[in-house]
Amino acid sequence: MVCVTISLGSVGIGICIFRARHHGKLENKATKNGDLFSIWNYDGKIAFEDIIEATQDFDIRYCIGTGAYGSVYEARLPSDKTVALKKLHKTESKNPSYYKSFCNEVEVLTEIRHRNIIRLYGYYLHNRCMFLVYEYLERGSLFCNLANEMEAQELKWSKRVNIIKGTAYALAHMHHHCPSPIVHRDVSSNNVLLNSELEACVSDFSTARLLDPDSSNQTLLVGTYGYIAPELAYTMSVTTKCDVYSFGVVALETTMGHHPREFMSTMTKPSTQQLLVKDVLDPRIPLPKSRKEMQDVVHVVKLALACLSSDPKSRPSMQDVANEFSASKTSMNSSFF
Image (cartoon, rainbow, N blue to C red; front, top):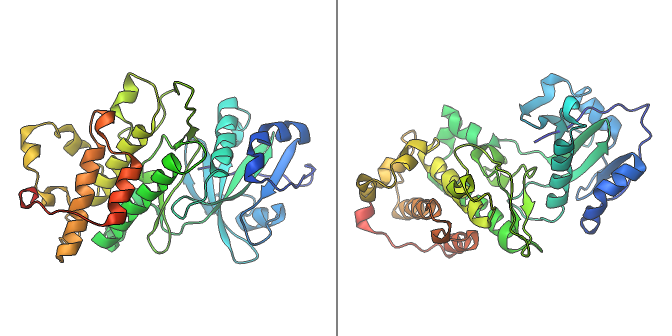
């Protein structure tokens, strides 16, 4: 995620309303007008002065995260609405690849409306600075919640199952219910954010890609180590099944309480075929108490393992996974315990 430093005064600010149907003209408008400020999908008004004042000109005290592309700031607006500002690092704002990722994120997120996908309220684009305005999700990333002992204990089994379901529904929507399939390409626990109700929202679409059915969809290798589908190491062709694999990692990470890298390295061994559910459950919280809760957790684990198949063709689609969750049906196999 990213946001950016804004110098008011010397910049002639152009305000324009940017609708989803106009997203393809983003780069042309930016070049022609010099700068763009667009807010949509928001019930209040946001002014540059409000953003500068809310962050005290992007003071480090308001920084809530830093990544490769830039930093994220928390900003409370005069309306009492809190937003997240993703600001591109100043030294990289002129880098063509970073500029492309910024435009890509705007383009992709204007295509999507879903309760489990982070809402983009707008953006500011200028040759000296760039930032995105997002909804603010109070609990931060799934990764941080699992890493923190106290917060992890708040994530009871019902909450964890719902987080995994929400992530699945978001990816199914992207893959199967958008005008063109959208592949995220960087699904990880750092890019699943939680709101105050511990509901999941998929975030960070800087590397997302709209699939072209008439193209080979060759790509450079992107993503987070430990979540990247193994076939990308030799095919370099991105498909929705790459996201399915990454989802499987996140789902297993959510049940185990940590990244399942050691478990994944032993998945082909005979001993793993006699898997006990308790072997993949976070020991920091009590085992599921009710039969229904245990069924839900078993269901998640089974689906996660199916998503982690080394053969992309053997993985379910995210629509298959979402349908399984929606049906809420699972057959308990006693040998699985």
